[in-house]
Image 1 (cartoon, protein in one colour):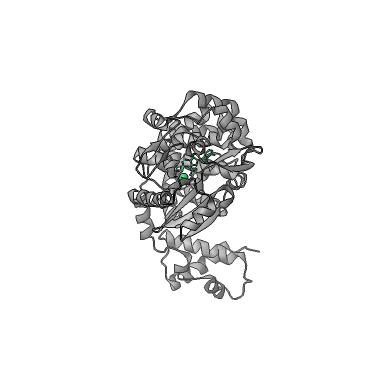
Image 2 (cartoon, rainbow, N blue to C red):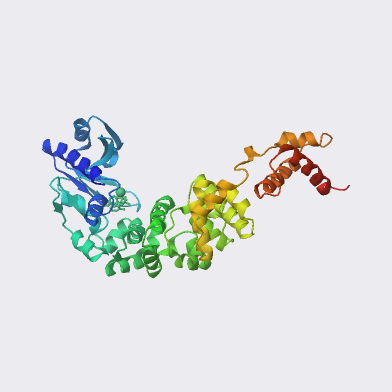
Length: 400
Ligand code: ATP
Ligand code: MG
């Protein structure tokens, strides 16, 4: 995204025109050099947060305790962070104190991998004290400094190594691999939410196979909840060979493959949102109905925005590709698209049987009607349905 980059360089120039140093840093520099799309542009500066706040009209102190303010510029947001060092990672999570420094090189030295530890100034010149460009050229992930020390400081970096490998197709350098192998158990100190964020990016990476190889080679999988405890799940994950753009699809695939671990257990243990849980269940249920031979009824129940995922899970399970467009077409051609479009509702059913006490049977009957309409066995017309329902109810009514 050239425009985003240009705007970031403008923010940098504003800072420079006030005698501060300022650089584009981190993932944006890496992705720019790789010719990949730059999704967000982080800026590092010698200006203190208060000073940055004074220079721009639209600024928000979003992370001021670690030196970050958000600058809105030309309709884009930029995180502007004061050069800093971190020290004493006592709890493996957050540095005990953040120390502002005056040299960009010191700021770069706290970053995780050489390819993420470059800075670019407004002339597009690169500051690269750890030879990140060389590693980009060699397609290598290497920690800045001693790998063991860097992983002991922040064990999440081990997960990040594997996810960058998935996104970029880079090999993890030998020393770094060995350090992951020796320090994997430290991952247990990291909050599951943070691991899940990296996992989600890992799953969606174009080079997922390569990164899963690293995950198993280093045995890092042994320290990821649920995966660590099930050899069936490990085996299934080892065979994933396509990117999975949704953690709900991932969970529904694995719950179908290994029903001993439920969707609920996954989402609870991985601290995932209720929406992820709901989607995982919707995909899983629809796949199971589909595999039962009730294609229309299954497709009716998958929300349109989950069809991509539905198709993907089916492909993971059967090595057969369904076309999402075909499923969309089938969905569009169904007689109805939701319960509201049914020609009858609970009240109509109740009125057909005035002598019976309302109860669960109404909803059950309604679902049978809905399914019969969706699958084309019954016309969506109130009279036709009423007649049919009266017959049906006679057959299913308890005889006592
Ligand atoms: P993405 O494209 O996924 O956002 P990114 O490189 O921007 O990739 P972020 O997680 O957004 O990754 O982090 C921004 C930058 O901050 C990284 O490029 C890296 O320099 C630094 N960084 C992030 N997390 C860590 C960490 N745990 N340890 C050291 N440096 C880190
Ligand atoms: Mg980023």
